[in-house]
Amino acid sequence: MIRFLQYSLLSIVFMLASCEQVLEPKPVALLADDLVLNEPNDVQPVRIGLYSALRSTAAPNMIAGDFTADYLVHNGTFTDFRELGTKQITAANGAVNSLWVGLYRAIYVANFILEKLPQVSGVSENTRKQVIAEARFIRGWANFIATQTYGDIPKVTSTDQATNRAIVRTPKADILASVLADYQAALTDLPSVASGSTDVTTNATYLNKISCQAAMARYNLYMKNWVDAERLATVVISSGVYTLQTNYSDVVLKDFTAESILEVGYNLTDDPGTSNDPVTNGVGLNNLFVSRREVIPSNQVVAALTSAESGTRSATIGFNVQNLRGSDNGWTVLKYGTASEDNNNIVLMRLAEMYLIRAEARAQQGKLTGTSGAIADLNVLRTRAKAPAVSVTAQADVLLAVERERVYELAFEGQRWYDLVRTGRAQAVMSAYTPNWNVRYERWPIPQREIQQNPNLTQNPGY
Image (cartoon, rainbow, N blue to C red):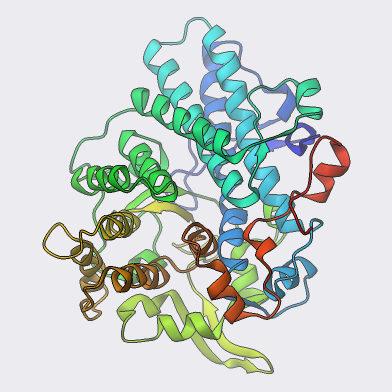
């Protein structure tokens, strides 16, 4: 059966601003199958649990998006990361299982709220609508990531264990339709946020109408709905709620910047840079990148990020000659610090991505030049990065420029593999990167543990 039903403990600590600030009420622990939502005082703890469940998806989602692609090379001893680095992924891989568990944990908590909250009396209508909208969004978000990662997945819409023990996979198209329905429902009741709002932490921590529209812009880009992707990205850009940082290095080295649209925070006890993070099999991002150096940036991405075309985006990685030995190229990912540093959060969406979404959508429509063209959007980011302006004008060349710009701008934010698959570029790029690449790696396997526990689940081809 789906493993979120077997989780013994769900921590619902949720961090708001810095590593030391904790969102009230104080953290509590709840059995996943015994969440309590019977009276108004229960609403806020369960709401925090919902955001905590979202947070648990962030690190494994980053691992999926970048470890599966051409950004990282295995440099250590862990089997799970060796499989990802050498492109010999198995259904028993712990990272494959961790993302699945995190996503279905989020879906479970969202479904719990959607089932229970309408029946709780004494809750204000505004609170009820907002929390239900947040649950709809997070369920949609989790399903979107799950279907992009695994393909057809179980469509879980209840907390009934008997139903979920024997659930089958639902076609990807049906899951994506449900994602859009969840986003649209969430958009109606999520709170508005005023243009020019300076509360950047709240803007990035809690869902609002603009952050929902940002997720919908990404959704429409993946669906190749170019007109809607352009329109929604424009709404986010024009809202004035989020602004680009002046210096790109701040994106790497600081939490809760003005351009962060959705960001998950941590504290000293549950930081993803520590060795206690359960969703990365006990090894957090900072440990993977820095302490253990289990994975290091590939030579290809190092060359890209240190080129003149990248500009100041080279701040994403750092070099230390003392690490230069054997197969270690000496380079390190700098985006994920320790719990005591000011860059230990994980950003799920930021404003720069909206410019990239709009640029790609415009390019696909043939809108290449002028103030409302794809090139103008790319040059906004290139100007910020002190990189030379885009000089190409042919549509195919502009689309390749968008792909490269996503490498420079979004490296190690968990999007590369998904980008290559959705654009049909995975086979060309990855087969040139490694002789072990196989078309089956355009989808992760369904975790072997899930198939063993639910005989109605089928495996993806080739695994």
